Image 1 (cartoon, helix red, strand yellow):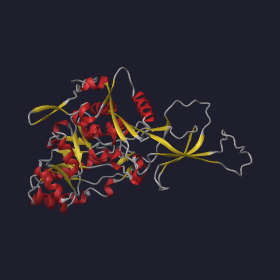
Image 2 (cartoon, helix red, strand yellow):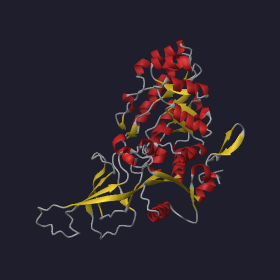
Image 3 (cartoon, helix red, strand yellow):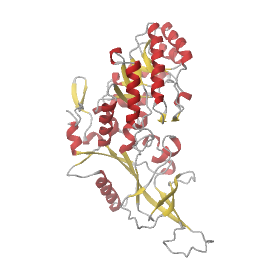
Image 4 (cartoon, helix red, strand yellow):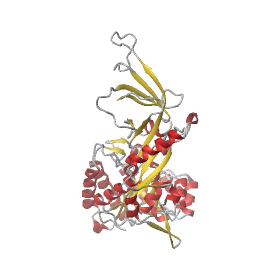
Length: 442
């Protein structure tokens, strides 16, 4: 089946020779938006449904259309780079099945993530075990289940792999300049260039197969030239490996791509720099396979969170002689308490340095003439650390109203807890009828 831009979008995967659907309303609880219904219509209907059922629990709406649009944009701008979706970013079943339907690979960081992808019918060759500090039992599990491609960055890791998975296809992760990123992963992972020769030599002594190089410029990268330097560094390592007799055939350029439209550097700018560097250091006739590990790029903008106002306080300055106590006094500070916060869906505010601010908005049209008040929004728990935003200017809300927050797909549900007994937000995957038929999944 061809998408609108001509790219082929596979709808099925094979398991033991038979074709099986990887995505369906039955296995993912997907709602199909037909008859011109929009995501906003769906949100409104769910909020109305919850109101009639006396249910104010928070929920997400996940747009599979958004994920498809991101994928087509990737294929257009980075045609040589195969995405291996980072499972850690968002492991919702509908997301993983959608990525599988789009025929991407998967970046897994643990035994459980590998188990999950295999259970969904993903074949082992579509998985890279992209963690350089792996528990021995996890390496053994990967070996038993045919997951051969994995990363390393130290001699100790090579020793573990030689004992537990001697036939592994190894990818050497190098440290690169990630000073332009909000989350600097090279502080924790990656071999320095000066130690690469020794590591490659040790791999050879152990009889291990090294097939390529990986790096990660860091999450929330704000400088596209970081990719050019990292690709140039990878070329140097390739040359070292080839001289030592390794058949170097894979380059993994990692992640660091934003999924938001308001990011500092556009995806197209990153793509232009990456394509230019690949042309210079790894031209098509080099025969090198190029992969990447995008996570937030695919899912960040696909998820919208709906949270309910469960409590409210009004703070007034009694010492202000101009405060006449009227409801429309702009000196009032409104304090609202939602049923989701930093221990739940909004944990990204404290755990994800690339996502430190959210912009809640009302689930209705706000007239320009409406009085706005400085509002502090809190989460539901007993902890005063559970603050969503310190100051936003919105019209007055009432208990039972709903606030919406966009761009909530990355590092949200995977980091959520049920602290204080507050339930995790339910997820409603939706897809338009047009996209459903484009994917040929009905």
